[in-house]
Image: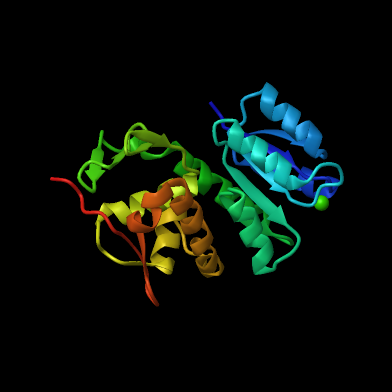
Length: 231
Ligand code: CA
């Protein structure tokens, strides 16, 4: 079944352009110009991904993002008119999985939508694989797409999941931001490197007190998993 993408964008031309390209790529597309309507749609129908303009005339884009997060972590790709790092980080801090700066190429948007959806589906293609780290404190179940820390499930965004599983693939190995971008997104995009830090911050926050010990900063290089894989 085709994945459903909800496009939330008040500029009609952009909205229709995105609809055309997404439909051509085989997605089912719902559109709205209103943030309030988007929140309502999210509560009423199954949406696989939200393409969200942060500058909406009615409710703040942040609110729609929050709603998507509450709806079982529907992935969100943010469209932003401002290309400042602060603005991108703002979107990512709120849990967006990716962002696109206007003006964008619709082909690029479709590519990113595909990458985020693939990530969200997780290890569907992989074999059943459960690994534990740190003497059983952290358990990563690739098949179920589950992370359990000290017996409690941790809900991660697709990007956070990608980061954690990338670091966990070889515990202790240091990954540069550039490598992590590739691992998480499946393709290269240099501008994204600086925002990895923001995702790491979110991930650590979700891992609570253990967070900084699980994802260790290696100054000037990148990050590594601080806990060894259990035998
Ligand atoms: Ca707008």
